Amino acid sequence: MDEDQSAEEVTDTKIIIAVESTIGNSSYQHSKINQWMSGIVESSLSQLTKLGKPFKYIVTCIILQKNGAGLHTASSCFWDNSTDGSCTVRWENKTIYCIVSVFGLAI
Amino acid sequence: MSDLAKEKAARLLKKRGSLSSLGSHEVRAKEAFAKTKDSISTVSYMEEPGHHDDIPRPAVQMENTYQLRPARRFPVLTVKDILKDVLTSYLQEEKYEPELCRQMTKTISEVVKARVKDLMIPRYKIIVIISIGQIRDQNMRMGSRCLWDETNDNFSSHTFKNSSLFATATVYGVYFE
Image: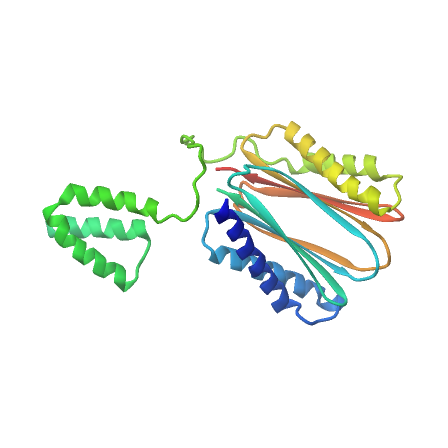
């Protein structure tokens, strides 16, 4: 279990780094949103593959403009609790909310 | 004899997967041992790759099924119909309210998971993600990318909108080999 927790922390850090390097200090810009989305998802996925573990990964990213609107997200999973896991990272700056979820399923 | 030893060394290199110069030095040193203790050295090398694994193995050991492909693929259209059905029935008349929607996301995800499980697709792991948000003149973008087996794994998603809220439902089906 300790190994699982440290693996999640490592994943957390890696995703935060990926998000920061892509969006970093930018303000919300509609024209760039596609680029940002692909950038975040691809860099997260490549960081995960570098870990070299026998997992299938699903990376989901939601980018939201800060406008006072509300958003709720829930996920329900049917898998093997001992080998599979997920990790969600919430990141924000003055104009953007970004939620990245990673699901790892053992092969 | 040297040919046999070289063959063994080549097989070992393939098993270990390392092609660095360090690896080859190790192999040469071990070749000398191989000449004197043939059978023992090969058995020990075969077990070693297992010890190098850092991943904690699950407690249950499963037998080989010798099955290369899933018996039934993930039914994308059926699942999309389920999502359409559930989202419309639960959210048709609702207005966006924080508490209600918080409960609603959890309930809907459980309901969708139960209905997809009812389809009884063997050896598939299911992930259901539901997002409900308020419509307030803002922009939102959702994207996902997956690292999996293209032939066996799939996903299905549906979006529902009414005057005050929107809801997205995505179901990923991943084959367990």
